[in-house]
Image (tube, rainbow, N blue to C red; front, side):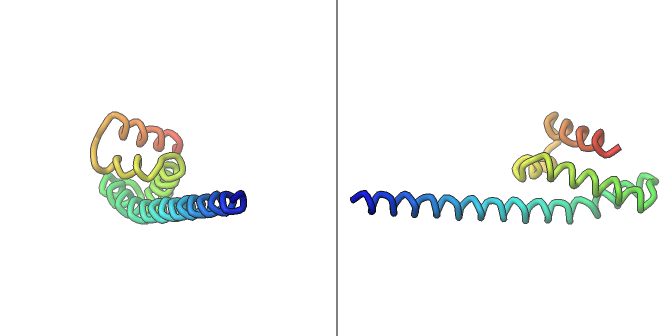
Length: 99
């Protein structure tokens, strides 16, 4: 009976660890996709405002890395969907960090 309980606990822990790994992989994939999509759009927008391409690329890459490094995928998904005070605060913090 004790052996059975131990095996059951190990099985549950294994399943939970697998879920955790899947979540980490999904988060990593989201962050990579976010950066891949954010940077070109950001560069294009900056260049339309008169910023040189190389400078725009450096700034946009910094912004993307700051955002993906400091916010969850759920928070990042909300930035583009709405102009909430929280989203503005997140973007302002990224600009301040990337000066």
